[in-house]
Amino acid sequence: MSLAQWNTNLTNLRDVLAALYLTVQESRAVVEAAGINPVYVEFDTRAITNWHNILREANKRNKVQAIIEVAQKNYPENDFLKLALDNALTNVRGPDIVDKVTWHGAGDAGSLEKIMGAQSTLLPISFLETGLQRAKAVVRVLRGDGAMGSGFLTVNNLLITNHHVLANATEAVQATIQFNYQQSPRGLDLDVVSFRLSPEEVFKTSEANDWTVVRVQGNPNQDWGALKLVHVNPQKHDWVNIIQHPGGGYKHIALYHNMITYVDNNLIQYLTDTQPGSSGSPVFDSEWRVVALHHSGGWLRELNTKQMVFRNEGIHINVLIDALIADDLVDI
Picture (tube, rainbow, N blue to C red):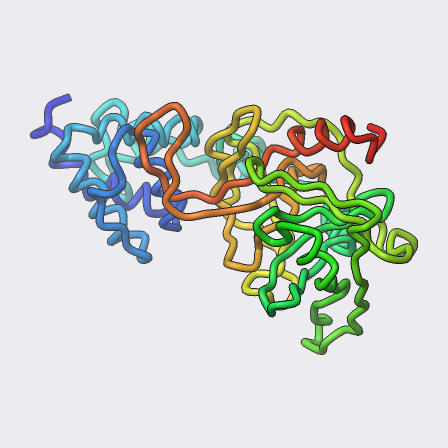
């Protein structure tokens, strides 16, 4: 398809894509997948302006077709994208589109419900209850020097966090972890329960893989449970959620635009929101299994490429599990 042909359809394509990808992070993933370096794109928080800028850059680089192909893979049943692939997206509201895409009325019951994307976002309502149970084991980590991070409790009263949160036994013995640092549905502070750590009993760390495991004093597992660790096999485009203490503040969960964008045996990258203080948080899949230990974010180099991408990143939980098994700290 020639550039001239596409110039008459860009406005309509912009409207379609702006409705499908509302956030900068979502659109950035499409740009990267289409082979456009995101540093050349002027992203904007307004979806219409954002996609105007993206398509303007794609048009310069003859990448509009690539953008459409990526979007069509994400939304294979979207009728507008099917038309765009055929260079027939001449009108997204008027008679042309009605002629080509039949609107089924109330008489066609099968047309009234559809999965809107490549993957269903439907989840059982028990997903929410299970998430609240898992959240009990997520803690705020307070270091002796005032720095803060996140972490979570697993079996045998072991705290898991990042090496850069607790790098050595001295930092661990001076630290405190806090359960229940959050607010009620009415916005009231809940009662916080604090524990100290016992690195003299267990302290293991890996600077290379940015994890630390340390024993917690007492028996917090009794009241706060544990996030059990199992080997997992997360895939690109899977959904992930992070329960965390962003900025060292109240416990939060990131639920939107949370797709995995890269995965290998050591690292997982994703679009899920975090802030400083979120380091050490558990990254969950849709079955509430821990798939990664969050540790960094920002402009990262995608491994095995020269491409810089704007993502968050965690340590694949299998790496940590294998290390804990080797030290007889957990029995998987």
